[in-house]
Length: 126
Image 1 (tube, helix red, strand yellow):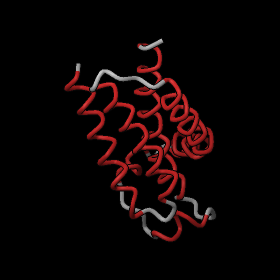
Image 2 (spheres, rainbow, N blue to C red):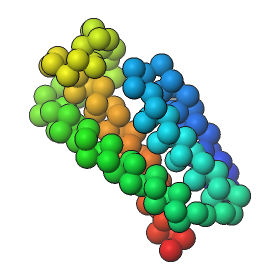
Image 3 (spheres, helix red, strand yellow):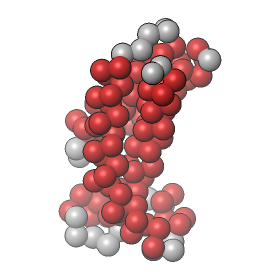
């Protein structure tokens, strides 16, 4: 189980590092780093209800804000688009492009993974 926790910590630390080149990195780096820290703590046999709850709250906020874009992705019927490169990088952040739902859908899926991990830890340690 320790290996699983340390592996999850490493995965989310890599994800946090990849967010450094994002145009709005602060939220994403904090959320994914926080998730990595909670997983690392679990690997050490330590659990902080406060930090786990704080991370769950931050992740849930992101899920709520990106869920509409994920809904747009699901209704687009172009499911392979989530794996494609954006045509215009600036259009991702303009909020006006029709394809901006792809980036937000990717973010939504990452947040869902973090939410599942964090709530699993929370339930396990309650």
